[in-house]
Length: 133
Image 1: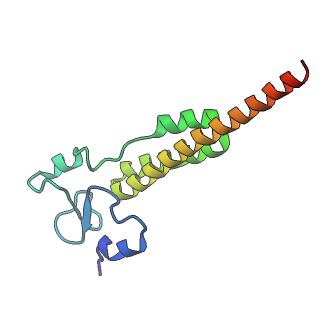
Image 2 (image 1 turned 60 degrees about the vertical axis):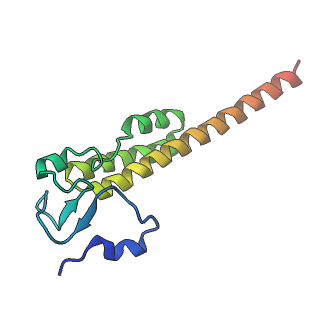
Image 3 (image 1 turned 180 degrees about the vertical axis):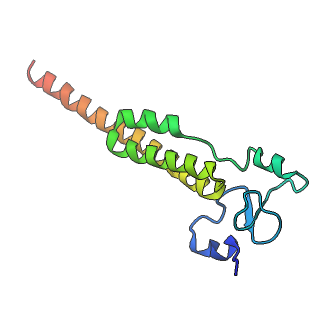
């Protein structure tokens, strides 16, 4: 018995995961469980695969730069970016979108943590130079 992903959407905190909706009926683009129906219903399957709305943004470069600033949380961002690329490669666009958003969130968190950390270190160094003058 094939279930629609809409049945499990009540368990997920975000009801809008990606621009595509998965169903158990119709032709499948990847030969897996169900088909993708997009906002433009008159497209051929090859056009659906090239649709920019179906493919999540890639944040691998952002995650790599974030890992240079603060390695501890930056490596988590890189992990999710690589997971997003792997999911997209195998046609799991919904999961790739989730991993892509997590990668972006961890990258932004890394930038904020690094900003506060380096500002705090700079403040400590500045106060110590004032005390010794």
